[in-house]
Amino acid sequence: MIGGLRARGIAVALAVLMTGSGALAGPVSAASFHFSAWPWLNAGETVLDRMPFLGSVFGSLVGPSSLSYGSDGRLTVLLVGSDYRARLAGTGERTDTIMVLSVNPKTHQVAAVSIPRDVAKVPIGPGQIYKGRINSLFKAYKKYYGTREAAMEHLRQAIAYALQIQIDYVAYIRFTGVEAMVSQVGGVPVTVKRSIYDNRIVDERVANHPHGAKFLASPSTLMLGANAPLCWGPGKSGNWNAVPNCTRALLYVRSRHGPRNNDWVRAHRQQNFMMAALRRLISENSGNQSNLYALAAAARAMPSDFYTTLPIATNADAFALFNLLRYSSTSNFLHAVFKPRKYARTVRSHQELRLSVVRALTAQWFGPVN
Image (cartoon, rainbow, N blue to C red; front, side):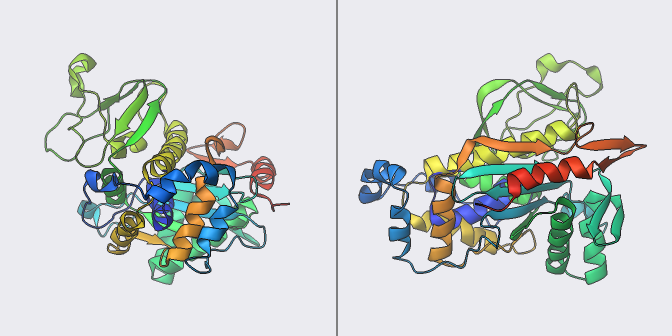
């Protein structure tokens, strides 16, 4: 883990653009996303911005929604990014991205927290401690219960217990979903706060390219999908001057090597990318719902690579998500990565959460809406 949305696309955006992996159906051209707006909606945007209650009026035109805020009165989603790729099929998969996103429907405040992949010994239920690394818990559940759906449900319960919060929905995605969705919205503009020189990441699209990719600092870089120019580094030469600037979104959210770059920095980058993606959707989507329905249909068309329990099947559900996110603060959002030393302690090669500190934060950010 886009803008002034349209109904269904929001659920898909939440599920796909936030977590940094996942696959959608065949690509939709970027041009198809930049459609003409309905005149009445464009004319009323200022009014809608100032009178959010009108959303419920328009929402009534498409019927009731099944979207639930739970007993705590907020929408909270577990976002899981899998490292699965076809060439490694049969070896299992790790969920290196585990993020929890919550929206307060009254204040429209957005909060996001990420659990680093090397966190271990996590309490997942009364009297239950998962001793392995958290990024292997999904795989363990899937092996035990037999299906992705059951594994995701148990992962939802486990993370909710660990953080002592309610989690309403889940969203699971793989690498190719990021590529497809980013392409469909014409790219995601992000702020690259400082240059990244990752000498280990590989652009697998062309064989035998040297390792590495660089992302130059910029107030706004348009990160692209699979159609991004090829990225490669200097290999063993170390000569970064001859290396092109990488604008491939997937590599940007996956990069974790190089000076001042690591798993925790990557998790923060994923959170910021997620919000940039939401702003993109919100700002670019101006009224023709059929385009957003196409995005949702694309996600549903590749069930092996994309899965969510978020309701995206009806116009009412889509509009409910749109209306919630449209007014949410994606620029000034609360976010944290549970890294040492504040939120975790390092024990040999893994981290263990400081549960009292973590739960104090989640109680504040994810607690019941008053």
